[in-house]
Image (cartoon, rainbow, N blue to C red; front, side, top):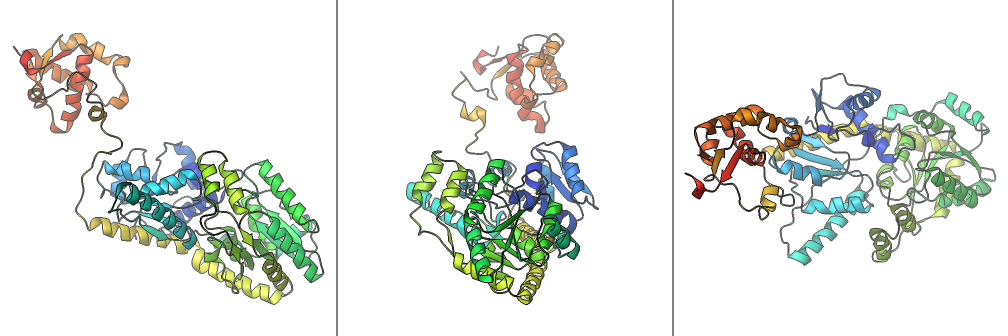
Length: 549
C-alpha cells in the first residue's frame, strides 16, 4: 500500500480543543486511524507550519502513539516529500503546495487534500484556483460525500466557463476528484445499560421515558435551526400521548451561539422536556448515546458537507432520523438504518443577492450561512411520523439500530476508510511514475526578483564584466562578517568561499566568467550573485568590459 507524508497542524487534528468543530473531530479521527491502520513501514509527519515539535509529539502520543518508525520532516523539506511519494493536506487548499512543488518538478510527488466546508469565500477561491494551479493527474482532492463532490464540480464548472468566456481558454485540465467518506472509530461507541441508567438518573429522565438525542454544534447560523426538530418532536408527543425528552449534547463556537440555539429550541418547542448534557467532553458524548432511544438531526446548512454525528449514533446502535441533505444522504439508508426526511430549497438563480452580500463583506460568513439555511425546508410532518413510528415500536428501533451498527462498522470505520486513502495514493503514484521526470520551473506569478525588477538597476552583471579587488581580503574580512552585512535568508557565499574569491583576485582583475570557473559548479549561482554583495560592502569593484586595463 502507498504512503504519504501527513502535513501536521495542531489546529487541524486536535479534536480535544474547547468548542471543537466537525473538521477537528474528523481530522483527529483520520490521524488516529492512519496511525493505527495505515499499512506502512514508517510514518512521515511533516511539520509544515513550524509548530512546537513537543506539542505535535504530544498530540501523536495522545492519539495512541505509533509502534513503527517515524520521520519528522522539517518545514522546507520537500526533498523528503519526494522520497515519501506524496503529501496529504487536511484541507482543500492544494494550490499553494502545487506551486511549491512546481520549483522541484511536477513529478516530484503527489498531493492530496480533503474537503470540509466549502461555502466560505476563502475556500471558494482556493477551489476555483485549482483550475490554473499546476496540479497534475497524480494529484486529487478527496470529497467526503457525493453531495459535496457535486457542489465542487458545480463550482469548477462555473469557474471554467468564466475562463473560457473571458480568455477563450480551450484546454482547462480537469481537477481530479475522489469520493472517500469520513470515518469514526466504531469501538468508541456502544449501548451500555449502566451508562443509560446513570445518565437518565443524572438528567432526571424516567427509565421508561422516550428520549430523542440531538448531538452536534449548537449554532443556528452555521449548523442547523432547531425549529423543525422542536416542532416535529411536539407533534410526535401529541400523537404518542406522552411527553418526549429531547436530549441535547454539544456546544457552539461562542456562548452567544449556544444561548441563541437554546432560546430558539425552547421557543419552538415550549411543551418539550429538554435536557442538556453538562459538558461537551468526548467521554460524555460516548456515554450519553446510551441514554437515548432515537437520534435526530435535521441539517439544513451549506456549512455541512458530511456529518459525523449520525454515523456515531449508528455505531452506537441508535436508529437515525436525519434530513435528506448533503452527506447525510450517503450514510443513513432510508427505511433500513432509520429515515431520511425530504428537504426542499429554492431553484438555482434565486440566491445571487446572498452570496454577493457575503462576497462584498456586507454580511459575514455566519450571517450568509444563516440566511441561506432559512430557505431549506425540512418536512416536519414526515419527521413527526418517523419519530412516532420508532418511539412506539421497540422492535423496529432494535432492527434499525442493529442495521446501522453493521453499516457503521462495515463502511465508515477508519479501519475501512484508511485503506481507501492508501489505494488512492497508490493509483496516483502509478500515474506519476508512468511519465518522464520533470524538472522544476519558475512560478509565473512569483518571478525571480532579479528578473521582475531587472529594469531597476543601471546594469545587469554579466559573464564578461570585470571584477577587481579593492582591498586585501584580510582587510575586509571583519567588514563582511558584520551582522548588518549578512541576512541568513540571502544564502550568501560562506566566509571561506568569499575569501577564496578575493584571493583569486590578488593576481589581478578577472571577468565574472573566469572567476566563477574557479568555483564548484553547484555553488556558482550563489557565488555569482555574491559578487554584487562583495561590491556592496567595498571588497570588490564591478566594471563593464570596456573598463578592463
